[in-house]
Length: 317
Image (tube, rainbow, N blue to C red; front, top):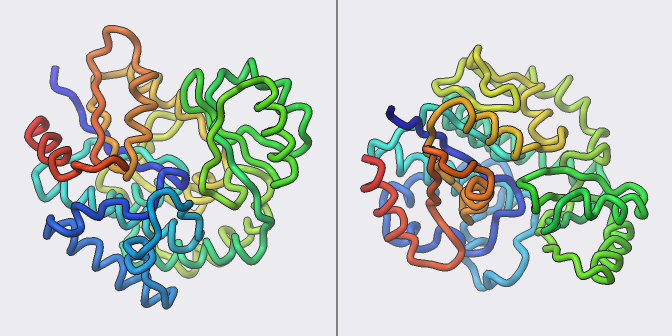
């Protein structure tokens, strides 16, 4: 039985300075797509994510400027997808994680690239102007162990379930600071993510009218070329709408559930088309023992990415 390719696009938290730099310097397909995206960001935001991302700041500095990190992430993922597709690696399905759903809409041809970047620029400005800043943690423990800690902190929300010992919480800075103190006291491992706004929480509910009123008149969407996976397995009508984008940033993410449902249904190659290999790592811990599905990453923060891409392409042709 042949495997079906699923392109996976990660969301904010997976970005970092200098992501994709090796490919940008050496691969003409990737470079051309990135330059196309940067030209559009310059048009709509009057800023260059390439100049910011490939400047003097090191990988150890959080890349948390919302507008530039979000547009950079979409651009990296779109450019990687173009590189794979032009190398004759095609997806049967697309799977987005949070803002990665916008990339999925572009790669599926449900939304034009220029429309998507204009939308993302507008969306980040709406969030910055009309919502409070928050902080986000990835906690490396089962929810059942940490639930009591979370309940001691008001307005801290579980926003993503990745695998059994990895989930994400978001809350106002003072509440997250209290949770950090509790986690440290209990020696529970966590990682602060470079995301300063309350995606997947009621903190962003104030921008819902933007999706109800502005989106339908300003942005065009159409039938998708590739089916986009969701918690209901797939959008059978191959169609996206304003609610699709709102749910992508507002609903808590249950990545664990999606992957388990997919793995139980068929045999897949889960291809992480993101900058850090995060989703491939999640899949590694989610696939059951003996599964015929596999996973592979495109990029990682540690280097040698040209070789990683070459190996990926050769293995899937």
